[in-house]
Image (cartoon, rainbow, N blue to C red; front, side):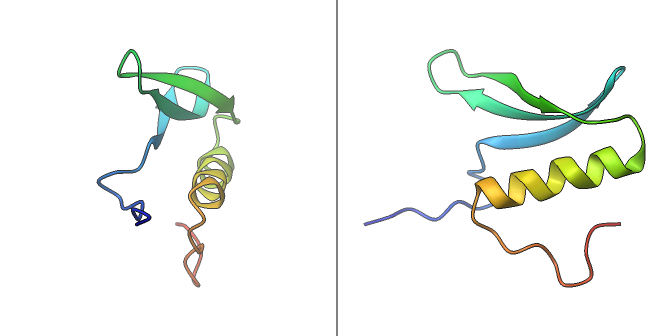
Length: 67
């Protein structure tokens, strides 16, 4: 049986760092988040990071997009 990825079991997270927005993935061995890809510091970087996270989880991007 395949387990669905939900917002509670999502291995990815998007965070803002001093150098911009990053997509992180949890390392199951160390239980620490590691940077996967960085984006610019503007709000467009946040949207790109969220879109990539949705793509990696096979989720549909909201119809109205991200705000």
